[in-house]
Length: 311
Length: 311
Image 1 (cartoon, helix red, strand yellow):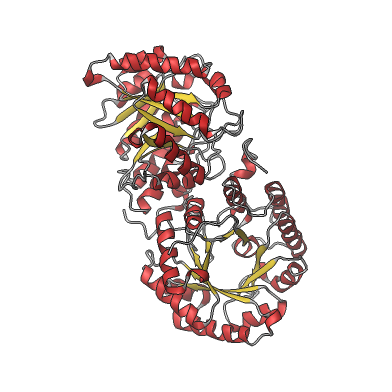
Image 2 (cartoon, each protein chain N blue to C red; image 1 turned 90 degrees about the horizontal axis):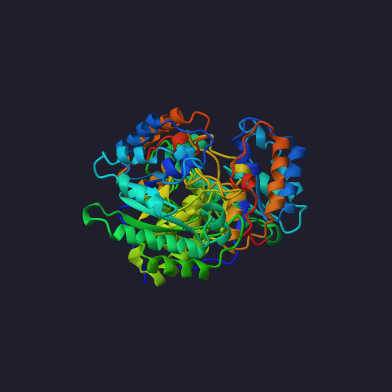
């Protein structure tokens, strides 16, 4: 079943979560809000603002509830947060998120290292979270996405068999997630693999449940993988401003694909993102104000928009 | 007509030409030979080693004849050089190149600035070169490729109409080139455009005459464009070690796609390049020895090969 390419895509900015959790510095809450507001003003309509995880382990994300509350004041912004368990989901629901994500590592070694959960434990947590979400009043009920982390390879286990990804996809759906995301946590994916795994995952989970990918740029293949996913009809793309990010539990993982370059790619293809590139690039200063020591990636900000670019 | 994806591709290393001509420093001839030998030993079997242009304008390439002679001692290496006119072609033939390239800018403004040739003048030069080549004994007759520069956009003219590319493709074939290459001289291309223009150019020139692309990474889309071209059955990919390159006549152009990352992409997809990545990455030191002030790009050299990578 071939899913057509889309006229517009949704860029899901994960910098405030995936980016910041991998930085040594802690961005002050007020500057984080300014940055999130800047990203919103540039046209982004989905932002993963944090994780409901122990502040002791992730001091960078300790203010997630406050950031969620702030982000929810911005009209039509989808506000996402990750949770590792029922307790995190309760906090996310109390904070008022639009969508809850649960990262299930297909590499069980990575799952244990990252979440301290075996696959069975993770699936049980997903089931409990799904039950909690189902019990919420419909008006405030968040969506629930299961992210298949390390789906394209793991820096600890190496090759990840596709049969494992598909098995866990089925189990996540059975446990009650609404959608699945395919995550290249460490940046090992290549474009043909991206296309193949999207098709196979849709075969077991249904095309309407597989709409998003999360890609890293460890080997410079991030945008090639994004284009490959786009060709398969994927419509939601995670990325982070300045290419921040990585994975604390994955040695060698480097940053997410760069939002600026991703937006440039889609807009230059005539695919609408709703994002104003000049305004987005200007937000790099807000990010740098909050994290002055962090190196920002991206080619588009340095190159300047081309003469052939239709704004 | 759909051209199938290939099991193996040819990486055409253009660093010694496109890379060096855009560097401020001049690499000493002896170090250039060491670098070319290193690239060959890493498995590269096509290298564009220079241009036969006035040494006054391009001192970096003044030793092209000597580098060609050296490169020709390496068994089974295809040795390429660019020429801007008949005089350059004579020098290239005398030096013994495997293949001669003529860069015809689809942007006439760029053509005048870069080669001081209008389209009519350039086509006449191509005709003369083709005649000269045809007069050579068959055993030593070089191949002749016309490169359609700025085919995807120009930093002076902006958008380049596809009709102009196709018209010049026809004129180049009529003037006697064996093959055409599509060149994104300034890095404005996007993947859907790459696919479309390859298909259209093949319609006017024949699929067997359109086998190669030359891409830059100005906006970070280089590998996405390379993957798009691969999907169209393109089998020869220009790239430069460390992503050196640009265009002296194109303000804002930045480097070529990075050979290291391009090889990684293909090898990780199971597409053979014949290149040993560890050996290729080691050549960066040879390049840096010859041009110590030059910044090298590329993600793969820093990331180290992934655990899932089959060597």
